[in-house]
Image (cartoon, rainbow, N blue to C red; front, top):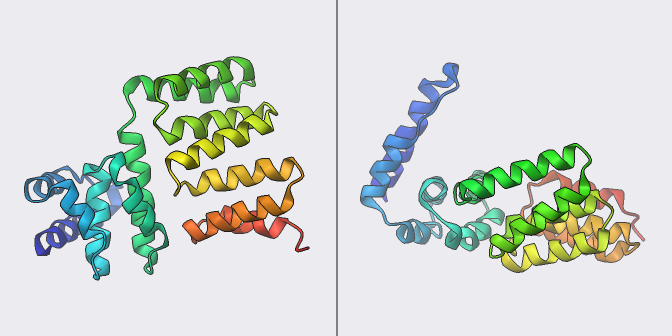
Length: 218
């Protein structure tokens, strides 16, 4: 554990030294972590009583972890320490991006461009193809939910949000998206429950609180 903290602290010192250049290369320190810690050991360190160790373990898993670590990192989204919560969220995002195949990244980018151009039908078709090819990933359902919601297919978008949460129950973005779908469908109380769940999963996410404030209190 002392070595992990040393690697992390050296990385942070390097970032601080290079702050003016806006560069911070973690590769050398991550290689040192890789040589000393297995990913599953880092996962166990996420439950340490020490805030610095939990933060360092989340940082290391952002580079060395995979989707099997999503749940353990998801639990830390409501950690008692805000800095740990932030690192856990960053790690989950990094893992999701890093574990996408090149074809997945290219296809997702194309879908987003089609959506930006208002070409909903081809965007939906391509999003469905992405789901077929990577149906074990929560992010593909979340992307298709976004496309369907934009095209006005609210019920289908809601179903994709539910599929996202079935795969990744800590996806607070899907909770809020599902709440938006339910709100559009006139189900205010169910929408409120979704927003509350998003705030419970990740207390620091402002859109969840903002969505709650938009709903009537009665």
